[in-house]
Image (cartoon, rainbow, N blue to C red; front, side, top):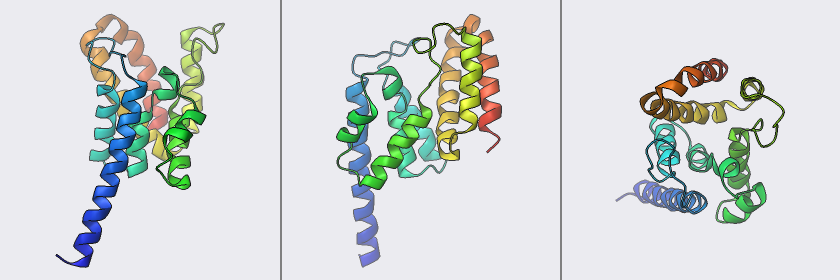
Length: 176
C-alpha cells in the first residue's frame, strides 16, 4: 500500500467518524419524533436527504448539514447547542455546517408569524430562500424532493396545496 493509499484511507475513516458523530447528534435531537404519514422514525428523512446530497456530489459539510437540516426548526436545538455538540469539528467546519443549517431553517413559521396566513408565510419563505447559498439550495432541493414523495403518496388532498408551494420554491432553488 502506498503512502497516498494510506492517506486516502485515513481521510475516509476520519470523514466517516465525523459523519457518524453528526448522525448521532441528529438522531438524539429527533429521538421520539415520527414521520407524519408513515410513522417511521423521523431520522429517516434527514438520512434520505443526506444520502441524496452525497449521491449528487455534495461535500462533507453539506452532508452533515443535511443530517441536521431540521433540528433548529423541529427540536430543542439552537445555534449555541449545535456549536457545543459539534466540538469535534474544526471551527471552520463547525461554522460552515451551522451556517448551512441556519440557511435551511424556516423563518416564516406559524409560531413566529401567527398573524400571517399559510400562503403569505410560504411566499416570504420562498423569497428568503432565493438569497441563501447555492450549497444550501442544493440541500433544500433534496429535502423538498423527499417530502414531495411522501406528501404526494400519502396525502393527495394536501398535495394539491403543497404542490403549488413546492413548485414556487423549486423555481427559486433551480435559478442557481
